Length: 522
Image (cartoon, rainbow, N blue to C red; front, side, top):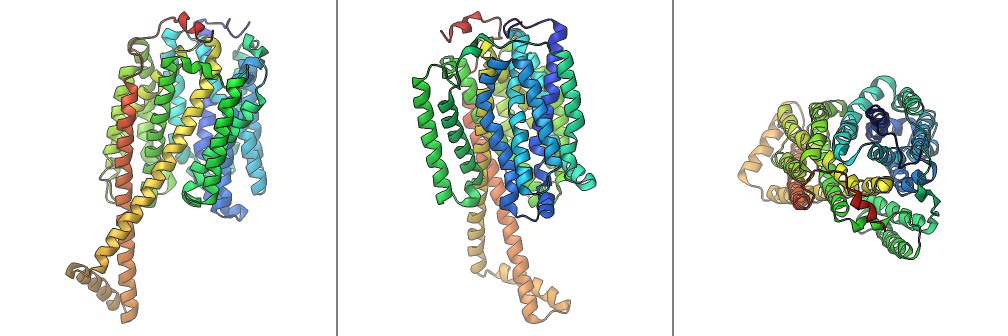
């Protein structure tokens, strides 16, 4: 049975869907569950922040680097084989992470783990596309997408609880039973397939090398730009390598017959606009969503577990709505669900424009419920429209490009809003410090009151003045931080408004059998 002769009976469609959903959930969960355990790892290994960041960064880079290979591997060895191998590598990498004894060993294990994890999502997405007809792909993407949306929200809460009660190694050991079940399900329920006819194409080595150099340098520059300095030699070197890699990649792809990334897919206007929407949506989504847990932990003083629990109601709501969003896109197309989803995402951002240290828990949770209504409308319809815009035999290539677009957009959004947060916080500190230096009567009275209370507790005059100055400086720093977060959420709202424009170019018709897309590559 070839990749184009898949069993499309209802029973087999659901078997593929549930098998792929389990692997996807585990892979995506792992990308978020680790972050909360990094401080504990620092203590065990005796390293600083710059070193421990490579546990997350190494995984991200290896994860991204494998994505361009997914389509080529899928064509050569078949979907079931690639999926099961990827899942097995991910589980073996998890075991290696749990057995790590120092920094080099855990970084190496994380890279190995990512070599499996990076192929699971695009391969699974392609397999679903191959067994579900175009008119049902929205429904399938809606159900499969529940794992994509819920796993990142559960990660910090689950990771924090497990790290606190069972130790940080437990976050990797948990993948062993889940992965074993997933492997058994895949081997028992997925039918063997043979490579696609496209499997005869050669391997574009230089295209892969240049694209990997571009993507790796770009993501490194974005991830470390704030800490290293946006105008540092390190960051400029990353940008230089990235630009050279992209230029060399595009030149190589124009000259070779067998491309590692099939750029002819962009001949489809629908595919191109779906990728554009994915990028700008990811910039807004990942950047804005990143701000909230940082705020409640850094400003409101919650721990990672409590911060994760605040996200839990929204995650449950997303899981409930996601299948309905997929079915909606099968009936009305992608445009209007995506427009409604982007409006909901913008409202989510705007509702935090006046967030402060006294914002109640309900004040934190309520906007996440608004986001949870919109996010499914932004995920399933767009993924279904993207897959319906290309020939089924190109689903693996399309899925890989979509995954790369989401990774780049998410990294760009997080880095940009971190930079906005930092710059606006420093701006507000400077502005408030200027007010402090003006020595207004109200300020002098406030400082005097704090100093008097300290003096009444038995401190000397000099000590009382120092306490008063420190308290005032701490208040200024906290106020500036709050103002910085407020500004960052406003900027995120503006990004969503820009992204909203792109959704109006999505198809507004439900997908039926579109054989015409098969001629795109001709």
